[in-house]
Image (cartoon, rainbow, N blue to C red):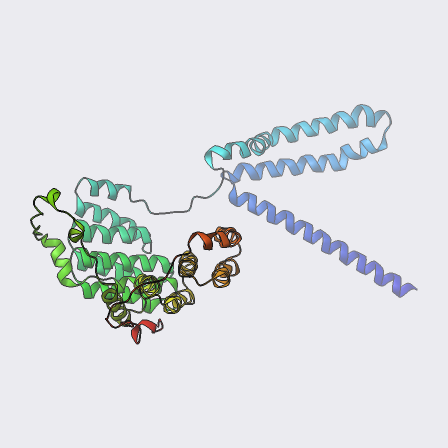
Length: 414
């Protein structure tokens, strides 16, 4: 029995020493943190020393006196305990007051929260507004010396160079340096290249440079929403002749109006005729062969297929290419599903196809408000079908009825 008792005593001693070491270490860490965060470390150390002296005196003298009781404990121990408490209150009075008042003061001054260093461009903005562009550039560069990767400052510098100093090449260099820095969010990089493309179109009238800027987005972030938007812009870039015409502002001749229009028996022949939908469909097909990412053109082609050619199958094919393409924004997919349901209702596809189309909105985006709108529409779908039932008797002309439908119109988005 003796060895077991000895082992247990050794274990208890080691456990006590470990607990004491842990307690002392925790107290030391707390004291180090307080000392590091204190604005006056010297007085804080003095308070700790005085507190240690008071507690030591209480442990060795006052507490045993109170524990013995009797006359000495009642008339000597209790008053000394109160006196020790008063001494401690005097020592820590400012700290106690700060502890109570600090939560309320923090509502107004932010408390001890550290302010993250950041660049300020108010001086540069003020100089820019006064027309002192070179001084504004100097002010921006001064801030960028401290914060070389600040996105706002670099974009402001490029904006002053392009819009105020007519230095588009200099702005391009600034944007290129910005986008080569690691750590910038993809959306910020895409915004920078989109802005540079705008400057190339507006100030340099350089369509190819703008196309190259947008293509950088596609190359840097393939198979993403940013790449889709950039591809859409590439498909919508105007020709050089059109951009030059917008700068030159040519005069547009107006034909002379019809005289004595009130004496005509009918003015129907004066109504301007729109473009032939077959011709428009052909243009869209040719455009999509070159720019398959142009979602707007593909959507318009789908509407022409349904409304003019009465080919709901081809319209659905175009819209499904848009809907099923990855990384499309949710709002766009919801719009195309609702458009497909509209075409199905308008052209007599029946209850089930339209219901299934609306059900896709709920299946894809169950937690969005569009899902609730789709449910309400599904509940009223039969009434909507009755209200929008129309005859589909459209007389086709002698032109090729499948113009633009045989080849490029059914091409998949790549």
